[in-house]
Image (cartoon, rainbow over all chains, first blue to last red; front, side, top):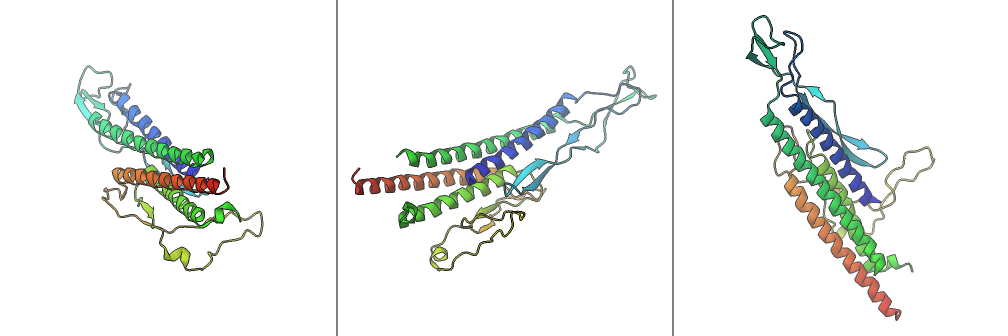
Length: 136
Length: 130
C-alpha cells in the first residue's frame, strides 16, 4: 500500500534526525574533554552528513545518515600551566565545540523530527479514513 | 459490473490514488529536509484532458520472474519540481512550513474524497433497499 510507503519514508527521516541528535549530544557532552597526556589533542567535534538514497524495494527516496566526519577547525587554546594536559608553554587545547552552535543544531534536528512525526500522523489519519469506508 | 466501474467511484478512486501518491512525495520532501542538493518535488494536479484523451497507458510486463519489478499497473501521475520557496547554501530547497501546509491540505482533500465515497455507497444501499 502506498500510504505505508509514506510512513516508511517519514520513519527514515526520524531515524536520521535521531542519529543526528545522538552526535550533537556527544559533542555537547564532550565540550570540555581535554587530552590525558601533556600536549595531546582533545575531543574533536563531529559533523553529521545526510544523503538521499533510493530504496529499490520501496521505490522511494529515503534519507540516511552519511559518514560522521570530524570537524577540521582549530582547537581553542587556553593558558593553564597547572593542567595535566598542558604542553611545555602551559597551553591546554580544548575541543572545537561551541555549545551555542550545538544548541542551534539541536533545535533544527528537533524541528525536522516533529515535521516527520506530523507526516506520520497525517498519513495515519488518511489510512483510518480509508478504513472508515468499510464501516459505513 | 463491479462497483469500482461506476463512474463516481472510479473518479474518486483516481483522486484517492493521486492524494496517496502526493503524500509519498511530500513525505520524501520532509524526510530529506536536510539533505544537501535535494530539490523538493510535487505532483502535477490531475487534468480533465489527460484521462479523457482515450489513450491507454503503456505498462511494462514482466516476462521473467528474475526481472526487477517495475511500476505496478496503477496509473502514474506526473511529478514536477515544486516551486522553491528558499534554497539554503547547501543547495536544499525544502521549506518545512510549506511542506506541512501541503501535507495538511492533502489530508483534508483525501478525507473529503473518502467522505464522498461513503455517501456514494450509502446511495447504492438506498437503491437496493437496505
